[in-house]
Image (cartoon, rainbow, N blue to C red; front, side):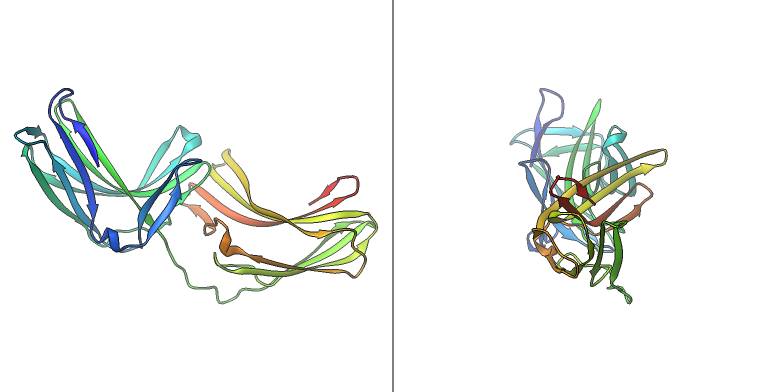
Length: 287
């Protein structure tokens, strides 16, 4: 809810947006800041977005307006670009012509089969969000109220999901081979793999495995890359010998992951990497 004065020191109004069957929908909890969380009802592509706008004024008071409209908006906000917003969905319904409101006015609305082709994403330098916005026009300005909803998109599993196998090393010093069971994983999947030591002539102290999320925004030459470590843990402690095999098993369900996004609306991409780091006794890191 929000209370707004229509004429500075004039009458105030309580404004609320209620989405249809909102309480019955799954809620997605998301972070707005370090210690601030919000929740939003979950929707899918093609679902209608309907509900009602409720405007209430105190008893025995009347407010005048120059029109009321409601919008369904999908937007991408790039933080590095001074918060510039790019709307990829914009649907508008006029709810009321200029008139007066006394007591409570209820305005139903529906955005039928609303397109939601991208998934909601809150990243480091970019935010993709969907929301319903109610706008009340008044003399000399306007009053706005927004309500977010969360969008998930589902895709069929790939028909071909081959394993990953690669050999890396330092000539005449270190030669390892790593293998992961698949190249594509769902968000609740388990990564299973092995690391083979084929040649070891340096004194390895330990080995770490981390999951890195890399976010790319903008386009060349004004392209920005940000990386964050989702998780990191030690998978080996002590010096390996030739022929040793280190098993890997990573359960993804406990981490805050999103799908991989590739060139969303030509504005951003988000990819995930498995990063293997070996540390020797001189604290040199081999990535």
